[in-house]
Figure 1: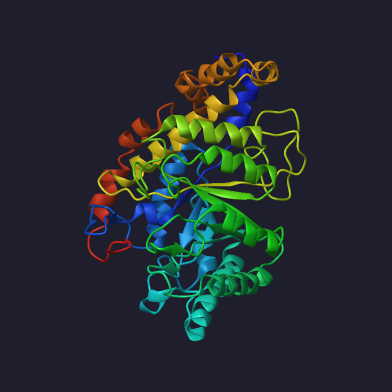
Figure 2: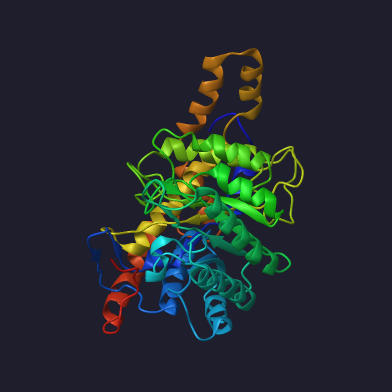
Length: 410
């Protein structure tokens, strides 16, 4: 244990952490060339929630599930919310989909055709209706819009169209609801993506108002990008709305979070802790200065922590549990940073001591600490082992025969 926050304070902060799992991570996924089917994969949104309940039951920190529309479209969203509640869950972020329709070949909300733009905006407004029905507070928007060739379309006009669409949806949001705008460097647009970076997303959010915030997907950056700098800046400006946690080696690989670069995940979580993003709770609940997971800046916004992953070759539920555990471990290490020693070294310009303060926390084995936290919460200390012993995997393989498995197709 490092000389950072007290053990009890760190454990208390860890018990308040919550991670949202994505409904689509429980379905079939794959590469551009092939979607790989697995036995026992859910066939309905309700079965996805059943699997998500198992993740929460074994980790204790995954109480909400993000929906993707139309992948999770149902006739009665109130009934779906009841199904979640009966399993100890809540429905979380509503994710729009304006990238899987032939009409969106040249873009959705930035398409040169006004009819296509109206269609895309109508879908986004439908997603706000679903938020009303489910009690969701967050609408997450990612646009594949962009161009492949110079001169294909006017770059300024596309930004104007985007701004108009975002304003229409923003004005439809109700009390306590937020718009989370995600960015991506490239793919499927290769020449110019309409929301390619955090600066573009931030500029649009700033113009819209306080209900619009930026989402950082850890896989959506150029190699070598200092993601923790982006996190620190957005937190400082009160505009970090959420994360899509995953891991990448080359591009948007959507692998299990922490698999490729656990040190990067630690650095990101340190900035979250430093900036007050961990314990801030909701947008209306500021952090408390002087406690683990909060900053000295009052009114730190709530940050939605969500996994966004495609488990192509590994079993779905164990992979999601592993990702949750990886985020927990990075968070625990971030909480153990000796803030006073680090600040003192920084003031003195002692480069080695400052770096050492971070490395001491990162090199701490926090698995025994997290095992204690779980046991004190009435959970098994090893979530993966507990899941394996539960028999759930064998049960769903036996029961989920027939019908059409959920998946995003390719």
